[in-house]
Length: 185
Image 1 (cartoon, one colour):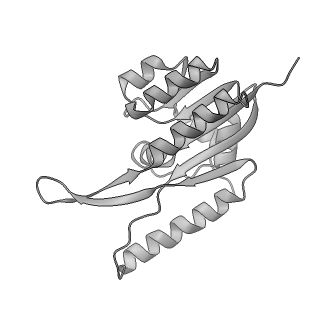
Image 2: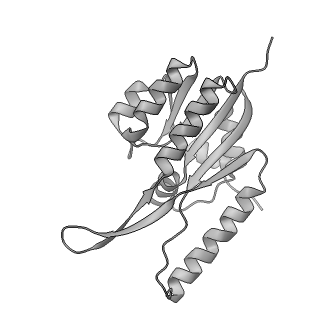
């Protein structure tokens, strides 16, 4: 019997928020996390999508520290087995009340393209999506059309019903999953 492969697609901004707001910024081992999610499938690769923190020109001390910490994290992640990092852009904008806010750009598009490309090339049999945004819904449908099973890994506090509904399977980001994935020195 032929080996079946899974690829894990992680929206880093989504997972960061889940870990920050629901798990007190616990640090996880992303390789362990990915292997647990892959389950019985051989993990082809994990794709991690992120944006570096915003920095003014010149940056504040806080921005410099945050950026440097994120660089160390990304550097460590890049040394993980079967990991591919994809960097988007962080856009600064002002909301209607004049408050500064930031949005990731290109992340959703890169993730969607990678997931569909691997599915249609027959490289994977299972796509594991760690995200909550309905923008991924068309990509999920395309991947399913390529006869690839799609599992949504989500937290109940943050996911879109349309994305939840279209995926073949669902797995909650639970305390148990995070504890099993916890980073140990």
